[in-house]
Length: 499
Image (cartoon, rainbow, N blue to C red; front, side):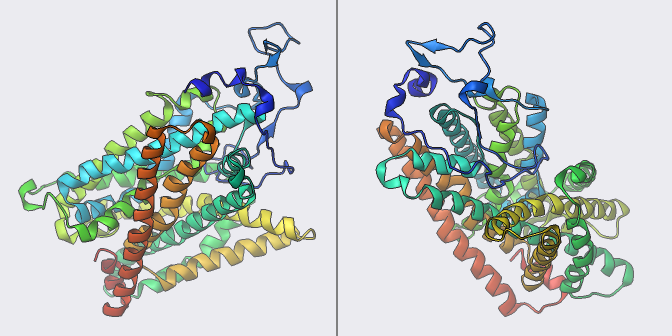
């Protein structure tokens, strides 16, 4: 802490200030339309703005050394306030993963689920906090005013111990591709969620069932058209509509979970050890927002307010935790062992209100698909431009078409919600959300590692690896079991996710 606060006192000759040679930094997660691309912005010495406490043209000096304040150097056209940033953070965390929380509580038990959700929230929040804290330190070391997640990883390794410096570029690419895999997989999950809800409505009104895969395949053309939206700015109105629809759908869902609740004694308070990895994976997928914390911090008017005991991050994640516990607890209490992989599938299809909820949430997920898709598109398109200089806008739209088609084909091949979500949560978010931030902290403060930091981070890495190994293997086993024992009809496909 002493080093972070008084880093401007340090002798700059002792710091290896590394900044990537290319300033055209590859795009990162920009879910909230705050900027087109993620840029690591270096402030030239002749363009640095003076401290507001000094006269214009002066530069703060301390014993002859420049004291660089990265937050005064930011030049944002439309910075976000603390309230706006909190709203964006809530939108990132309260995504479609919340629909799987009742199934997570089914795996953990009612009472264990409460405490385990708090634990997962603490781990996710701490790792996000640590990532931003490291970024603030690296801003001052490299005299850069903002960074993305991949930037922080690369610069931390490049300025870390001798052994880590040769892995800086590899670390950056690993983070980018993990982001790609995570959100590309999320697109496929969204496709299954949309199709599952419409499949139920179709069966209710038409009187017969179709294979769920047909409904997934029918989404191909609408999703391709949605992906043809030129850029994220044009998706802003779509995002607003999605938020409204999701709010209506979740409101109706809460109404059904609160109506005619059984006694708590009818549900197990503690789950089994065998199902706990599934709980952890589902909850991490639902709650993790590691990909958006840096874009949010980079666009804040007062970035220091993002951290702190009552900072934007802690307040936002605290609210998210309460909502997740409520829906998970009430949903499992209401439906028990019949709890589906998406709580909307438990709503009585014959009720008009339940039909409205299914349609609203399905349309909200459809709209959100475009935002998740653009994360993958930006990363993949940047790679293509780096390797093929003659790439044109025509090739860009070909790439969009191919990527959407692949995401739909994956959903057709594995049309199960629960295991699919668990696989993404176990493999991707355990790495991105837990293991990588801890390693970045070690690399950032490698010359000031304490015994407490070592013990704490070793425990977090152990938790991350346990989630990675047991969660991934468990999710893969569930997927294999679903297709080796369950007929591929529409209704059984949706039920297999809850097994």
